[in-house]
Length: 102
Image (cartoon, rainbow, N blue to C red; front, side, top):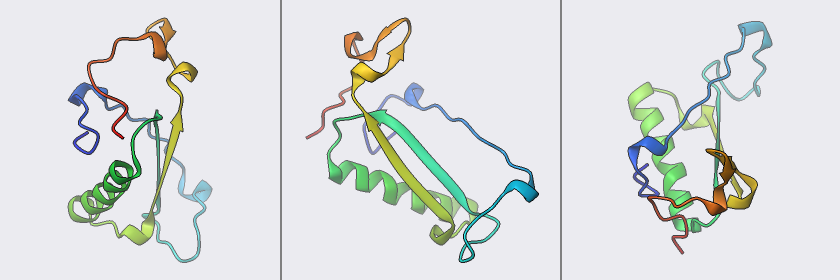
């Protein structure tokens, strides 16, 4: 939230749990291997996106004890016109935060 200067209520999570026998990961990773995918509106600059990735690695390592070697992060950016929120296209919504940070 801090990397993009977003309000605290703009963070949503979805967790997909797998049974151990269904959890396949690369040989050079441990059973702590975690994939993080972040969907967001396009418009943030590379500096802010890199800071977000660095911050996530740092917090997971220091708060959860999981090595960055076991973390994979992907940012997916889409135009606001490709999102539907509260019954309308997101590009028609009045946001209480700034998306274009460049």
